[in-house]
Image (cartoon, rainbow, N blue to C red; front, side, top):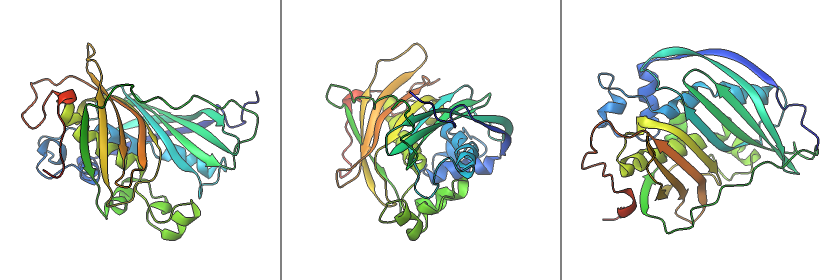
Length: 293
């Protein structure tokens, strides 16, 4: 096997900062309602852990700028996040990035861009058409869905302006706003950021588990197909066994036309400090929500 010359490449270090306003705008952009004061009001604010991914977006962008792949056709393939400690409502931290791996998919390559800080470690997997064929390993296979019936179905409603809103948080790739750029990437129209879809899905998932969305400590998911602003998604979940320090669930999401848009999802949350409220029941595996009821 031949390793890619990009494997192990250091991408540098960057100090990033954020304010309460940034964290609140993020929560609103991914679908937090205005009455979730713990997510949108500075007096009670708990920062969603996936907000950290907007602070580290510079790293995959930096790799694209070096010419490792064609930025007009590359797409986000999957995401991993491990939370080391919660984000404060405002602050500053040092982030360091590298190319952790490059997988050869034949006609394409997948670049794993790892960003580390004292708050989190995150890995972007970027699917890059035209960059494969160098004789490297194909990489890990996709995770399998649980071999038991799903225990829960929820609805994730996106809105028409969501991609335009979310891109103001740092990911300004043109394919999310410009029809011509979307067409160059092989899409028929601008589509929602995968990380926005993923974060939006975690809000009802956390409620169903009876945990707080800010208690997320580990996350994995693959982006199987684009979500278009305004799509209504069906989120299917399988509750895992409780662990000594939290609750886990596997999940996937599909669009109204049956397209799988998130696959191989797995999230682990801390146990809540207080019993779940009636709006956030603990009986994940026994509850099914009917969006039309």
